[in-house]
Amino acid sequence: MGYCSASKDFAGRVQRMSEGTEPIRATSSSGKMNAKGDIIEGGVEEEEEEEPTSPTSSMIIDKHMAAVVLHKDQGNELFRQKDYRKALGQYHRALLYLRAMDDPDAKKKESDFGLALASQGSQSSAIPESRRPEIRTMGVATRVNMMNCFLNLAEQARKGDSAGTNETKTEITRLLERCVTEGKTAINLLDHFRGIGNPIEYNAAKAHWKLAQAYQEQEKFELAKEQFTKAGEHGQDARKALQELERVRKVYEKAEAQRLKAVFAGKLL
Image (tube, rainbow, N blue to C red; front, side, top):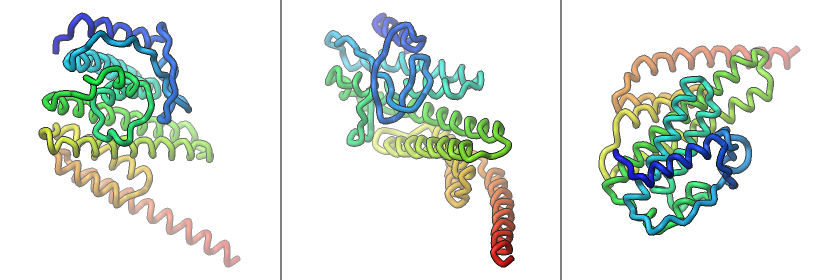
């Protein structure tokens, strides 16, 4: 897609924001992010944008999609570097722009940076139906990338704490819950394609697959099996995953049985 000069100026400003050379301020209920793109506890910074000069709907889409591509590409590069927290920050920024253009769950809108941008002009809510599949497909792909980050962070936390402290367990639980939330949102977003065209099967398969992995880590085996099966329906080879799931389930059940036996024996002593 070719972008107009205004889009390039906008993308340049977004680049300066992500580098921390242009200030941003804000709050959000979904977690805050500093100027370097890291997600930390609290709110997301909200930029004070200048009022666009009578933008057309096409201009808004092009500007926002330029920002989405910029942040998503930066997130992908950080992911390749295994800097998963900063990658999450960039993916989150991309989602804010996507939600500014199109929010299927409008009744559940949050007050954050992306929606502040959306409120700048009534044109932003008048997205042509022909563009919605493109926007929502990008939204699903970005959320799947975020799920990847959460799963990798949980694995890092587990490997970094061989003693299995309560603090680490709490952090892993939080990361897996965030992964599940993103997965459910991605799948819900795919459901909105029913009235505007078919989703890309690859995105659907990946969303179900990553959600299944999160459920498996949470030891919610029936939910994991359901999601692995759905991933298979969208083209993934779910057979091996289901075999592995069954193996993990048996290991868990055996360990749990031994634990309960030890507890019971201790009570009888």
